[in-house]
Length: 296
Image (cartoon, rainbow, N blue to C red; front, side):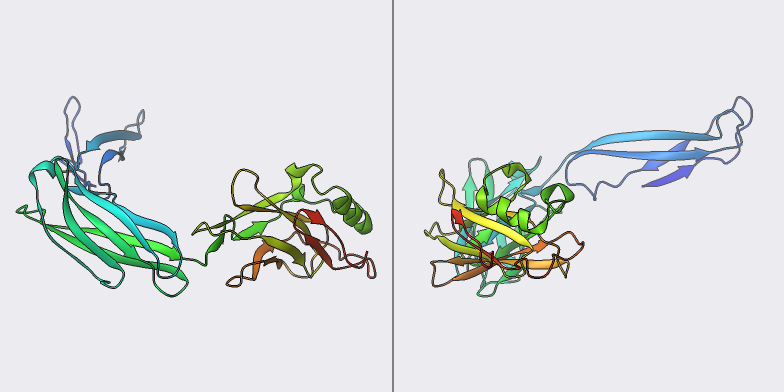
């Protein structure tokens, strides 16, 4: 945003002008608001704020503005649609497209109702982690002849979590109880007062069935158990901090019946405090649906 003042001095009864230029490049469409602060030697109004707003209209753009394909397994494909949008969309044709990663992105031009678009196929790379690329879409418009869209996603193993890190809060623990009592309480009725348990959901991206056979925290900080969601094929893991850790971060191990992912783990951040008394047991293991304890 740029401003131009016609004069820095205004005589009594006179007037001045402030010319304002607002750039809409930071927003593709929608409402944009700006504030101009005017400082003067007027004792009654030393600071005056001018508020400006405008509606940005897109002449030609893409829908979506960015293509997020979400989570994919290695080598799998995901199909998506990109369309021209804006005031000129119905009159403009897509003439060509290109990408910076031809092994990952493929597309073909297609007419959707009254606007041009692309049917895009994104193939997940063979390595885990976040992947990204871009597409350049050329049009027959004289000035708006090149549009660009960013593509991103994440390659995961088939079984995925809804939480990558569980952070325990003061209300999620029962450290005020004696250490042995915490274990016995959790074992005797793990479903009691589930509102203080932290839940992690696991699902298969390809809808392949799996079972969680056992969960275990070898450090003895977290008690946990797993059960299958009765309404879906997902599994739910419930976690509760019952011990005081020596380190801030830990892992809860999950053992499954899948050969491709026999052992999983959920990372957690625990509350720090006094360590549990020695000899009171520091290892807990629970089978899915029915928790048990070792060394109790």
